[in-house]
Length: 394
Ligand SMILES: [Fe+2]
Image (cartoon, rainbow, N blue to C red; front, side, top):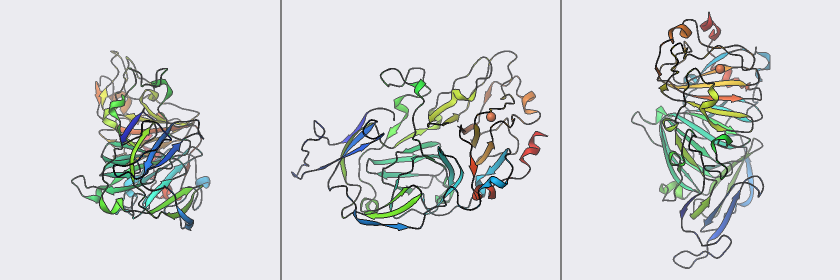
């Protein structure tokens, strides 16, 4: 939640009569978080935003977090998961492959090749994508929002949406997205806010770095969609509405989809190596998403810029490598995940530590997630496991 935004036509005061230019009454729709105590937005629809009928339970559109054998029978160890081995398939919803999960979040990958022919309304968590390659247009009740490679895309829980794929010059087959289902909700780290909730001047981003959905005409076929698939408690239900779902003429508030380009994260550096928490970008109740972007490195004359070997004994660490030269890890490439479970020492591979002395900058881009609750692997994750990752330390 970045701050107050508005789009389209609004009445002067909430909960009062609002009519369109032709005199037709518009229907208010309050979208509230934390019961009625948290952030909220208010939308105005042309038709009452109500489903018709009981809904229909449908086969899950993508694998569940615990489908198949849990990885409890495999060793807890450092791993390299290669998401390029996940086959391009399905749509932005149906093509999802959950890889790692805990009570707080699910981490997966999506490489869509087609579009979904329904609106999806996530009920189990906020959704966050990182666009490794490709792009598209998110259409939701809050309007449209274009995204491209290098963007984070945030969709609050309970918002019906559809994603149209757009080629990035290499064609739709190049779509490759990191996907999070954030069950305890996404927040900006509280230390980045001043007492009135504004982003502090020393925060690593400003409100101008975030782009919110804006009302506008969605693509014709998307504008006509009347089917919404909801997911709640990992159950999928198909609902329908008599009128098009994306019929909002105005909204305002603090809850809305947004994009944030990772390249606009302003990194902090120190005289000597700073812990990765300075790269914190988004937080949940028990996790921190960090953005590593190209930057100058530590400037002490004897600094060792490469990360020190460490045992971060309370958190599991996942890094998704996006671009550049990954100085601390041999064998990984853009599209790789590394998983370093809590308490198991890890750090740079032999030689990297020494070679980093005297370096002045790094060109790497990566997304890291630290989670307090232990992560479990899905069977699909085990299929992406690159053997002998431990050998990179020997
Ligand atoms: Fe680490």
